[in-house]
Image (cartoon, rainbow, N blue to C red; front, side):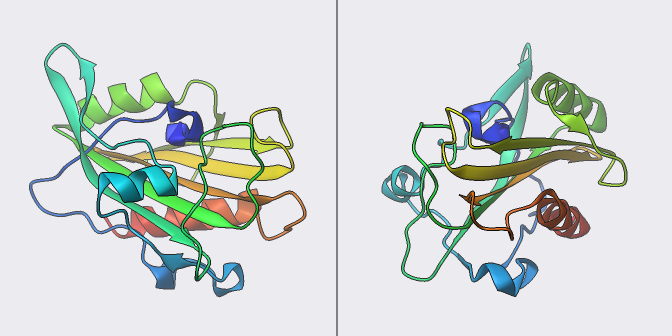
Length: 185
């Protein structure tokens, strides 16, 4: 997924009739020292390592549409790929994405399709799962946490990655970020 997750698993897209606000720099804990760096072009998308966000079919002619995508990186950095490319992540990075579906039942279907392998989390949105990877073949010397979530007709994901020596990269922090993203709906 870009837990979604980072492997591209949770790429259900979302666009809304009324705009959905995503995370802002003030939602990201200051101890991570990150700033928003939203991709503005396909070049930015490639540099930041975010798979292109586009509508994805949920079934038949049913689609969810992209609502937002934001990347937070340290000042002066452009972003590193967070989708399991076999390279370590060398600094903290947050990715926040959401998609709006035509109805809650469509969002439930999209979430179910994309969250099978995560660990169920209670108390985050209507549904949520946690994905955690540390120092694996896809993420060497890296801590990676993602929460994929659903609230009503919106599905989303927040990812947090960084070097395996950074104790700020934790499931506790990613769960707080997911709560902040959902609170903006």
